[in-house]
Image 1 (tube, helix red, strand yellow):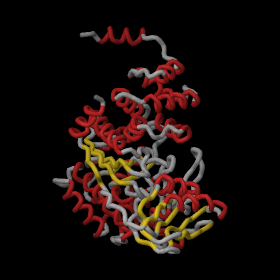
Image 2 (cartoon, helix red, strand yellow):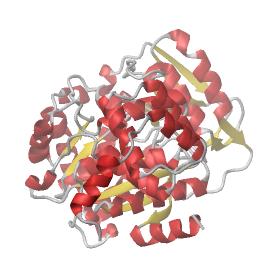
Image 3 (cartoon, one colour):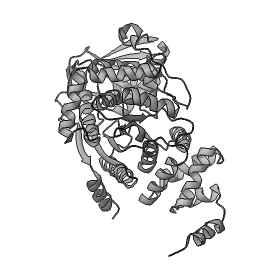
Image 4 (tube, helix red, strand yellow):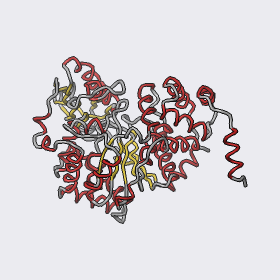
Length: 466
């Protein structure tokens, strides 16, 4: 067995690393070791590696892929690239939820307060719009005064008071991911299982979570449309998080249509508040059901229910008795937001331009190209093309007919909300191409198609890499 001083001597004697060599190695299909991966992560965090080299490395990694060991090393290196948060002082089990990205995916606004209302601490570090998907932080910042950039001390104070807090990364928390996340969006390197895994889990693990529930999307609106790729991502994240000591489960869920009836920023919050107030519109039923399933798993993993099913029941009780709503509004107030804006949500909603898109024929809505619909939302003003660009809180799409609905010619399919009238034409054309109407109704699609726990994830990965 090598003595400590011998190991230190070998490390000290190791040749210096150069980013160009690491780029070439990955470009040519080589596997990077832990030292090389930490060099990239630390260089991204400190700014010592130029962005053009980071971009080249991302593209090489996207094309060549990562091994399981590389993925785990990158996740931990990014986790360790800055400060970490410890929720241990809260005296509760810390559990979070994360989605791999979707259109109209607003479950965070439901699951965080519902789980918190049932005794779980929910320290949620979220992101902004990426590609065709919306960003949780962009949506929350449509609430006047809401602060997503809290210090770690402020983050802890909100958690103590409300049980849940949804914030952005601090400058010191996982800085490597903040840099690489923005670059991926601008370099076409988003849709890679290992990069997605490392980005998501580095933030979650840095938050000191005891448990994590992952919502991995499948279907036309997912980053990874292929079911096998989505399954691999889910299993990869579960195995990686479990290896790091965080109890984790992943659910594969349908993104073959927008989740709920709203896709945008402010209008998604309005839909979420409606459900938290105990209302149950038919167009939001999938959002309600998925939120309760996810919250049920969070409550179960947080030790507040004996099974995920009894966790679901507790979450539904919190939804119907208003305790989830009270947590959400308390969190908004604690983070500087004005809750009175929800008293008359329609009055606050002031888009620059509005247009209703009608069905061109009669029949059943059979398919939705959800990725295309996500780009339509982005181009209405609700998303961004470059990092740091502002988003319009009032832009988005309200869907009046969802998959399986029978419509008549001339019946409204959706209402578009844009920043300016000039922004309506392209999204209208996208929407008309993205929604398919046929004479026969579509087959039903399961909302949750598969669940990975630690054992099933490890077994899946063993078979996948043979």
